[in-house]
Length: 268
Image 1 (cartoon, rainbow, N blue to C red):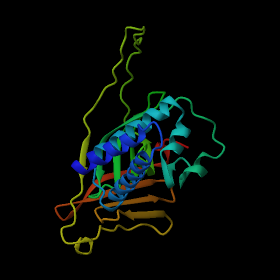
Image 2: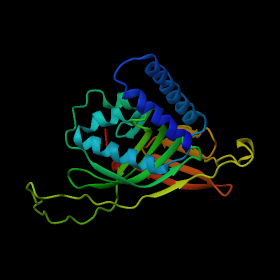
Image 3: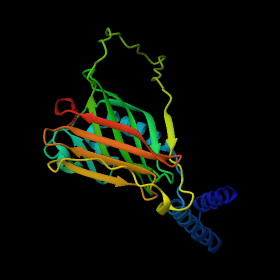
């Protein structure tokens, strides 16, 4: 902790220099070295931070409301991001071809996050509501980035409306005026981290496999530390399946299992 404080203090001092004296140039070089050292630390020994995943998901949702949905999807997408939406499991850009802007986006918030031991991969799970009041459930797979502005970006996303919808609430006039402060509802988020391997990933149990029809599109993934597993499937009849497991107490625990019929899918 003292090392990090010293690094950032040195960096701040270099930025505040008013002119490029030899001493200040030296401080600038030290600051650059410190930044590179921090980057190496994050790559070589990353730490799980499911709270940061939740915060990124919430920022993603806010960006969709403040700008537009498609721009937010692009801004927060990792390389190779896949949307499992109305047109199937396809890459983000293909799913957005020819689609007009969506000025009024759905609102969503995570209620649970599961992270790999080293924090490089995580899954968030939560609820959303569309502008017309439809309520649904979503799951998002996240990948850690070196970008400190957006520390996680999404790799896979599936969203579907719930089979049972809540009763409509009466329309209430929202208060307005310069003296009115509107506070959005804040809910607790269940944040969990997988157990770390004690004697190396080679001694860890493999994730359980499941039978998948040869006619299905199917993809599986495993975090680089072997503690978080994901599995998506697109069946011939249009059914979507997304399953996530993480390692706890030496056992693979299933934490997300979404099976969505073609009619329930929300999105492009």
